[in-house]
Image 1 (tube, rainbow, N blue to C red):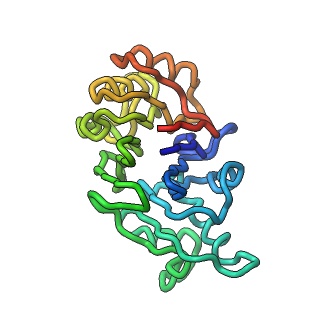
Image 2: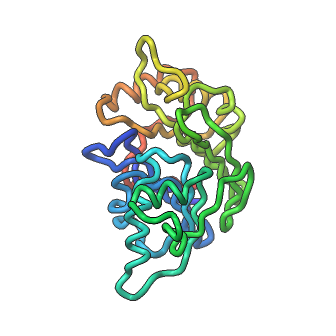
Length: 248
């Protein structure tokens, strides 16, 4: 399994990165995990625009799904004619929400270009076995555990504090975990994690490598990394960056 960071900025695109998006590949199958604002442009730097086999959306905040609108245009109005439908997995109501985002009539909305599916607890996409878990967040949001050939990618999605993450990321080879906040007083509940919390969850889950993502542009990334290294996690920690590739 090969994972490429397309976007890792949290809440809104930063000067060096679009919002959340990751390309996950195995056996010639290409899955885009989240497609936040700005991601579609950067995706084209690393992978052909029409060589995507499926999309999974963790939740319907703009920084995780909005560039699906641009991708609908690209696939619908390709000069050589519409390209084949691909599946899009997302929370309930994804098809309606995306049609509204582009001011389309919900019928057909984007359904002639994308085959929308509601996320399930466990399902398969191409060669990947995927498990989802609901996370504490202001909207319906999911963490993903993606398995292939004995390797495991755990992705926190957007989440507040939750014991679920320990089991969700258990023994993962790579844990992409959000680290939106720096340590401070009066952190909001059920919204996001601090870098130190991400490290503590990674330690308890026994993951092989921790990559901090959803990096909000107003934070100092060096502080984010330093606070994560003050956690109980003794393994390798790094900050996500556009174009970073992880071979599992």
